[in-house]
Length: 451
Image (cartoon, rainbow, N blue to C red; front, side):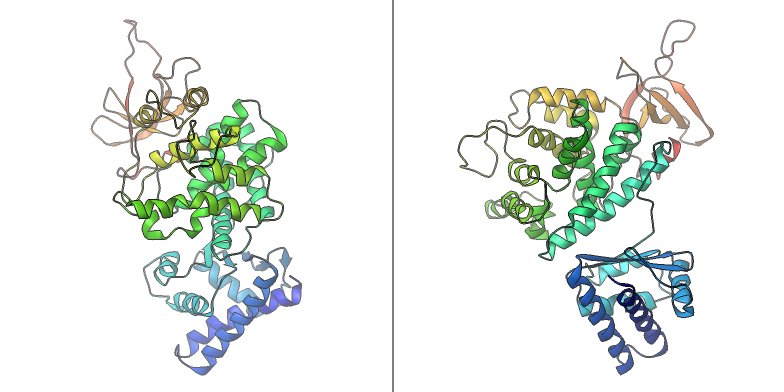
């Protein structure tokens, strides 16, 4: 997008918002302002699947175009949105005039206590995303949980953009996808511990998009442990990220149904593997592995899964790795209709004797990779203390290093205590041991801040 069109789009957005603050929603000037904004947005989205307007300081940046700083109107508009914690507005293809009208109406509700993103969701707005600017790139010397959070957060936001583009019938932006895969691949290589801790968060508010990123990260971690590296590692991550893209065509009432699906509903669900392969095959610059994994990831080792009646074939290595990551992350995640399961329980379910779903050799390697109590997990000790796992023992998975954050009475510890559960006392016994994993959400605890 050139500078003139970028500036025109932002000016029309600012003007539409200013109009609602001066006149009633039905006033002709307000309607003309929304019409002008809709026309500018439609023209921009005809040339690109998404448009990002970012507000950094007093500057406005549209995609890669930095607008002139001299315009007082734009400076005031940028400050106004930043004061409401909006640093970034993303429009995706499929955006309608009604959605823009709803966006402007939501932005003008200054007295509402409901967060803006929730107000957009309540109005059925799916092609506008509000957020904060995060740093995508991280240098080799910039590691740790904060750097991992920035990369992970950007990945989830980009996953949503990819999903919405596919849902609108457009082709997902492979360039944007490659950027987040590069960031995740660096983390898998340089700071796997922080990345695995982030994937362990049990949230369902953005489940679809966090699941995409988690499966990609878990698949790349498995692949890296098999000495897969470089371009192939990124191709594995790319295929894993897009494995469920066919679900953009699956009705939400089927995807989120809390009860068992009927045969007719399950037949609808099963179509996503074929739909996904079609979407990815039609997308330019999509790695060849992606449609294969989308098609195969619900086929079991004996081909008893779906799609059915496909003849004899040998599953791709990436498919087998993604299948493990997919089921593991789905079982441990909280959903509106089901609480996530503890790691030990998931391990038991996935490792059942005779289970044809997974390659048993790869599954055993995955279990060893994740450990019994992964870093970032909240756990209860035999002393009734609550702690966060901060490191795994190199040889004994039952005895991690932990940071104690709550005492036996349930009170928060003022100074968290680092403890090695493998340490012995003067009698040669272990005074502390991990008893079970604990869900942090009911306790209102963010384990990541203790890492």
